[in-house]
Length: 349
Ligand code: GLV
Ligand code: MG
Image (cartoon, rainbow, N blue to C red; front, side, top):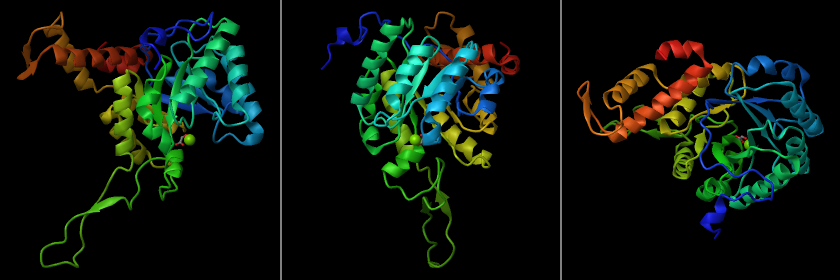
């Protein structure tokens, strides 16, 4: 076991000290762009104002013969833009692929000082995080990167799900974890052909009516992802990092997308991936705190200025614990308001 006092030491001489607290950032949607497509890169300056995170995707969905162009395109788009408060992330290729070493070394060398987070696909266990952690420290030291680049793992293999708690606590670089339902379905041999969302055949059938066994029976579709999201949220919350729902592949089904995003939000996720522009508004709607909840949270904070004691508000008991929940909501609302004038007006902030 690594000694606790060494956990927060840099892994290379000259690398920046690991962060002790995760940066407070608004990350309602991680918006995927294919960086080898010039037309898409040209729209990045506009996109920066519309989304919370811009992610240059180098992994799945990028054809093998475009991998190098995607890497070069990502570096070009990172250099060409000022991202301000919007996050700049990349999803690199998997650790067993022929492209990943150049993904990491070229990108950190060229734009490591601008990169917030590396998303690592197909993480199987804490050993994958340790490898990237050490390599990033060496590269940060070599290139004089001052701010540690964080790691975000995709949970998309059965082995990864088994090891999720160890993955979440593998390094102080861990930013969070996203569910990857498409690869996870394949890894588990689930009998689906979808990218996230439910399945009409995964259902519970109501009991047959007494004396009418052949009468039609109500069927209730269940959430295929409930178990995995719950397991991921517990691992992330216990480690003090963030949980995200991943992709929803049916771009025409906005109601299905919203329902999937909302289930994950209610269970503790803070954001989701957006693969299509139409999903950005859905993620904003779902992952921004509710206006009425924010107004109530402001009342709690006003009634208990130092955060201790007890108060009754609208007939509901408040104490130190609800004050902390209120603070989470108001802090999140402030982050949203700083980015989004329309939401600022709604929250009255
Ligand atoms: C995402 O990468 C997924 O496999 O769902
Ligand atoms: Mg995947």
